[in-house]
Image 1: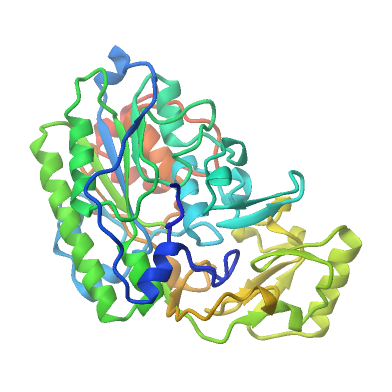
Image 2: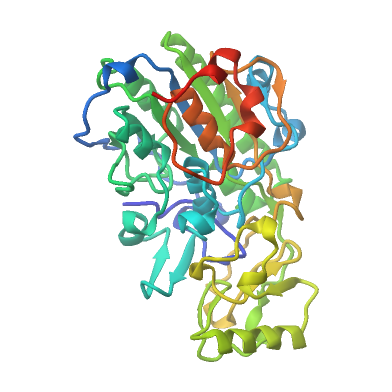
Length: 439
């Protein structure tokens, strides 16, 4: 079983095709909870003596945790992280499109989606003549789809062990490496068991102990899709994960290890406005390959014809661009996987190329995938605490691609060229952490 339950209802690529877990939540069903999951161990070399002396980073994603939920619902444990460490009150900016797989992978590579290649949860690659779908093991577990060097591969390349308790891309061999320890995605794995697994990894002998660990929870994202960002269900999910963070922080502290804890999200959530916008009602898409709302004409002449069709039948609910003319701040203008032309929602609307692709009706209240510059509801949380972070430090909003440089700096890893920068987040680090140089 692979990432078949990652939550990602979105306008941009999967439209209303909910993952299995999101469908069960939308129907008010409770997923089966399991207390065990097999850890896959890769025969990577042990930590070098140099790496054994370095700090530890535990990177936690709370999928869909909007930046303002702590203020709106109350999160005493996350608030404690802010008091003892770093926070970004106005939110961290997701990459466009603000979807689960593109943004998780941007966080761990420092690359915008068009540069690492995961431009949506599902998309077509004209060069491969194949479809990537985050629900299919044959694509999400195939490292040839992924560009860049994720942090776990970067660590392993430099003699440092890593572990992934769920993260998009972590089941594939990328840049010649896999994490030393990882699990196939299982949304039913008990939330407390996940913490225990992280603590077990940190209890391994120094040569085997991972210094970079990822941990993932989808509860808030599920609640947002099924019930909306303003619902009692959302409040309950926020409180539950805040308690989980409190438990994790307490158990990490008890290890006595120099651990830096980073808690963030891939994107936010907004209440969707129905009905679904069907693009074929505005342009002739006969014979055009589509994937969700992405359009893949056979040549440039057809792309221009489709673009002109949209201009002749405008809608206040979306804007249309030839790919090369996309707004620069979206960083979505150069990869053939993005399609051409590109249709961008002008509000919280679900776009779909053809009505024939609509699944059976499922009530969905919340969604994401939109431009965070236009919809601040897409912005995500960022908190950090540990020996390498300053206390009570508030950062201005920054892009999530900057997290890569931050973690590489803490772990003293030599990072490849990427789209992020340490400068927007450097003030979060202690003086000693800032002085470190890759080794």
